[in-house]
Length: 220
Image (tube, rainbow, N blue to C red):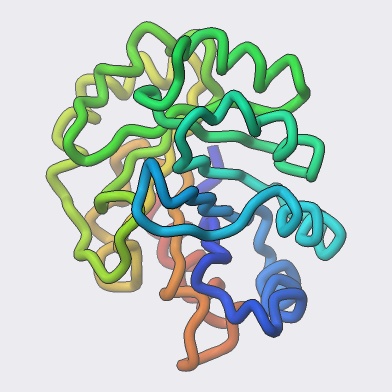
């Protein structure tokens, strides 16, 4: 799988969101990461399907919706209808993980599971044949300004073959920047979520994206 940077729009300037997304797209960006928080499963509150629908009109990039919300089954259809191509859920939020994954796929999107830093990657073992994607959180979800937690990858080596055999794309999210990205290369990870490392005042989103994308391409 080709290594990709997936910019998290939560760090973007929402007053110029269309321009910032365009900057990334024009630099070769293919995926956008959408952090959806409900103020219940995690303390912060972000956005819902209406903004996803607006972003769908702004770009043809793949939109992956990371649902950090309680009872995701109530809202999955709304996010997919709004334009989400991939829906990522936390197993602990689903009454039946298997049913949730099947529902996502029935509605026409790809399905993925998210593993938090305090959880073992093995919690996804029963669903390897049903998921398209695994998102490994390298910070505690819902809190900003945290440092990258390398220990979240301790269990990855023994799972790599099973992930490959089941064609599961592995993604990492949390504290990824020019400094930390070297420590996660060459470990079977194909997608790297980056927020403030892409959307900041030091350079345009496109320029920052190019810097990170060059690092992961060279590192793979």
